[in-house]
Length: 309
Image (tube, rainbow, N blue to C red; front, top):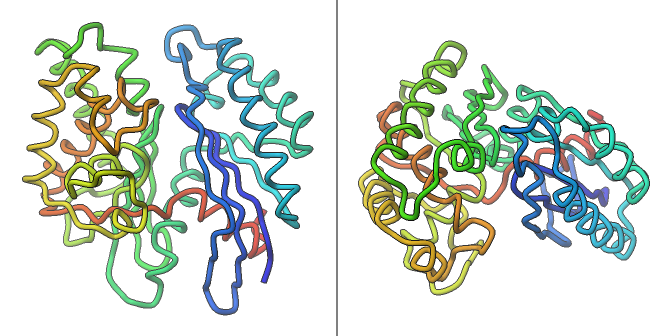
C-alpha cells in the first residue's frame, strides 16, 4: 500500500486527491479529496496569458493543499497541469510558483496524456469485466475522448471546454439564440476533429467525467445536496440530458445558482458544459451516459503507485 497525493490543475478548478493505492489488489482508498475553483484559464483564450489574479487564486489553493499533503504524510506527490497552462505564454511563472509552494514541478501534460490518465481513472475499477468504453472528460478548456477496453485504444483532445466556450461566445444571460448557435458550431467542428482519431459511433459504454457531467447527474437525480456516492456510476438518459439542457438554456444566473447541486464556480459555465455533453450524446447515438466520479485524479494516483512517472 502506497500513500500518494495527486493534484490536477485544470482551466477551471484545481483538485487534490490523497489516497492509499494497492496495485496488488487494485484498490484505491480516498484519504482526502477536494476541489477549489480558481479559474486559471481566465482570459487565456483571448490574451494567451494567465491573468495575475488567476495565478494568485491558484497559488493560494496550492498553499492549502501543501498543508493537507503534509498532514496526511503522502509519500509521493505528482502535480499535473492541463489545458490553460499548455496554452499560456507565461506558463513559466506558473511553474515556478508551484515549485516554490509544493516542492514539485507541475507537469504540463499533452492532451493525449490527459486522456490516458482520465481513462485509467474512470475504468480501472472496471478492469477485467470486459466491455468497451468511450470516456469523455469535459474540462474547462478542452474535452478528451478516449476509447478502449482494459487499455487505451485511441485518444484525442479538442479545444472545447465549458470556460473556453463561455468566454468565447456568451455575452447575455440567458444566452441568445445566436450565442447558443455559435457554441454548437464550435462543438460540431471539434467533434469532427475528434472523430478522425477516436471513432465516436459504435457499440460502447459512454462514460462521462468532470464537473459539468456530475452536476447534470445531480440535477437529473433531483439531489438536495451534492452527493458523490449517489452520482458515481449513475446512468442518465440522453432524453433527460436534453431536458436539462433546455432548462439551463432558459435559466438566468440566479436561477442556476439556486440549483442545490450547483457549485458557485460552475454557475456561469454550466450551459456550455451541458451543451458539450448533449452534442456528444447525439453524435455517438448513446442512449445514456454512465457518470463517474473517478477521473484524471484517480488516474494520476494509479500512475504514481505503479511507478509510471
